[in-house]
Amino acid sequence: MQRVKILGISGSPRHANTETLVHEALKAAQELGPVDTELVSLAGLEINPCDGCNKCYGYSQGASWERLCYKYDDDVTMIYKKIRDADGVIVGSPVYTGDITAKLKALMERGACFCHYSASPVAGSIRNKAIGGIVVAFERRGGQEGSLQSIWRWATGIMFSYIVGAVPFPDDPPPQASALGGLADTCDSSAGLGKYGAMPQTTRTQPPNSGIFNLRSVRNLGKNVALAALLINRGTLALEAEGISIPPLPLTSFPEKILQPDSYLKQLREGKIKAPSYQVYPER
Image (cartoon, rainbow, N blue to C red; front, side, top):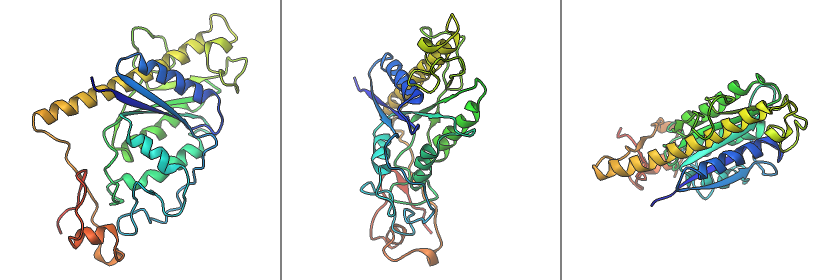
């Protein structure tokens, strides 16, 4: 039986609530069946923001899996390799001034080389994954849904993938914090900034409804991402058996005048190299 892999990314600069919630989601994902998981925390990793030099674009040097970025030799390539090898991704973040963390946003910015408009050698190489979001804030209405939208925009605009919510499973029935994703809060916690601030064991009131609802949402998210990853995996195999394959991504065609010598697009245009199977360069 072919297994699928779910990657969890904690976008917090600390090893705290977000990391705990992503871990709980991954544990729940493993309960679904043939699922392997891995957790990556951005805490302590070097992730620089994109400065728009466009060297990763195909009309310039062009990104590669050896090095996605030609300016920063940091941990971004390593993380996107893990994303590439996963069937589903659970992305978590605390709410900072109404949105995801700067570190997570920087990671997302650096994924521009995977888009059709970058026309890079890796454009289209990461697609069709199941992606869900976990967001934790202090207040119950503290910016979770708006922050979740940032994760969703990355999922669709950079990853060309499928958004998954936290629809309840029988083992984690409603009520829960949210069906949109693993949305959580720490306002009823005795240790809001600690590692378990969103969990039932630190909830001050009894019964610990706030922590229970948080935990149910992230567990349901983990199961939904795993289920969607299995559906995509098995569905892709079934379609291939019928002779239907995922079409390659058409790359944006840039004007001849901006193509740099020996750039990826220049070589494609001149027939010196061929595009990989996951992309196609339109005939002019």
